[in-house]
Amino acid sequence: MKILFVNYEYPPLGGGGGGGMKEICEELARRHEIHVLTSGAHGLESVEKHISLNLTIHRVPVRGRDDRATASFTSMFDFLPSGIKLGNELVRKFSFDVINTWFAIPSGITGGWIAKHNKVPHLLTVIGGDIYDPSKWYSPHQFLLSSLAVKWALKRADSHVAISTDIAKRTREYYKFNNNIDVISLGIQKPEFSKATREQLDMDPSFRYVVTVGRQVRRKDYPTLLHAIKNLHRSDVRLLMIGDGPEQTNLKLLARELGIENQVQFCGFVSSE
Image (spheres, helix red, strand yellow):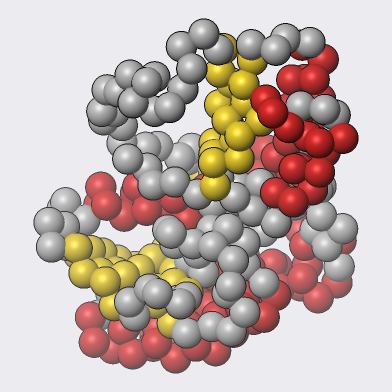
């Protein structure tokens, strides 16, 4: 089977939505021919082929993708025309059996357009922030244009998947969508960890460490974590914050205001290994 996945974010760009799709693509690529249509960024190849898997990543140029962790409105908007153009070319070249689009906007519009005009079955996977995001004033359900875009993407798909029961519920509630939505939670490969001592990782054996891994964006609510470290009143506790994002500067300022900057280490983006 030949499958085209459409997602405006794919590692190393973006967060959990792209990462979850990557796990699925790599697993399916052991048995099927998998192609991914996604955004490009400086330093990334336009075509990336995995030798050990039947997996090819196609990246289209977009403006404004300067941050690894988050997309700009410009980059999301650019993905529509550039993604549709390359997607049509890929469908004609590879004759896909199905298109699986992740995120109702902007990917859902791109994937829906490609599928409709090439008469390919279309599966839409909704993730969360594309449907409802209480941490943002511009949550898609709050505005007419974005709400209509989500409804258009939902209508153009032949089948629908949500990664949680809550997201399925929000989709029905906010967009008056009554079609069947299958809930399929994200799965991951069992990670293989290489063993290392604290000394090898420059970690003090006498400290107790709290570690968080994720993009530093508002909806993660990291300020609550910083306040919790403060309220422990323990000098032997250290917080390692792995990841980066637009909230990092604010979090550093908060750590300083709370008087715990010496207990918090911002590790930035690190590889999975």
